[in-house]
Length: 299
Image 1 (cartoon, rainbow, N blue to C red):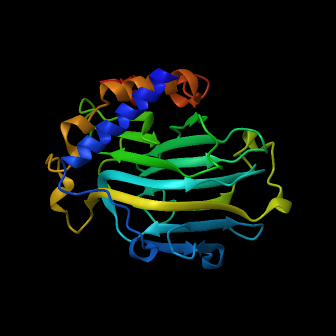
Image 2: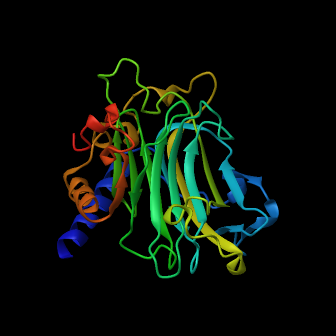
């Protein structure tokens, strides 16, 4: 435990040091209206009195969602979430980047999905990556804390070299790009994306493969958000100046192209202790291993 705590502290120091070298600081913007538009069901969206906390509610009628006003291609995206407490079976809270407003057939997408469970059973985090409408690249993890008791930080680092999913600055998934593939059909690096979040009912698959159904007597189910922060290349047609690899921003510099030594220690701990499912290990679904599974996350 002592080793893990020191490793996590080193991870935080590493990211903070990188950000300190940048001309931009990932300071949360306090105003929801400055960053986001409500996608649907505005009456299921509330804020705290000071506007710092945003709540999305799901009931038997509908869920709710919001999206950023701007699109980005590459960067660091971070939000603090407190998930639905108690009996949340069948409920999915999603936090993701997507190139389209809807689930279009050619979309690129980078997903965090938080799968609810029965009271006392652990939440499952599912991550997924889509390129040109093709996903099926799921990983599932448990967590080392109860995500319903307090706010925790969920972040995505996205550059042309790798995607890294972080929980409280700990890398839980690394998804690498490769220049050895002439027609890259697995790494989303061409399309700018919005950031979205939503809460919705998925009791046909989310909890124990759909065996556990949503208990609507427990509704409304509420997930809460705060401290959105982004350092990214904001899209501006036809192409923003920062879209190429310029190394001007910390998230596009060499140290952000691979895990640091201390990040590798944390990532190894996660791989040993928290992985529930990895599509790269599922030979029943994929008798032939997807090409991207051959790329080492350690490089």
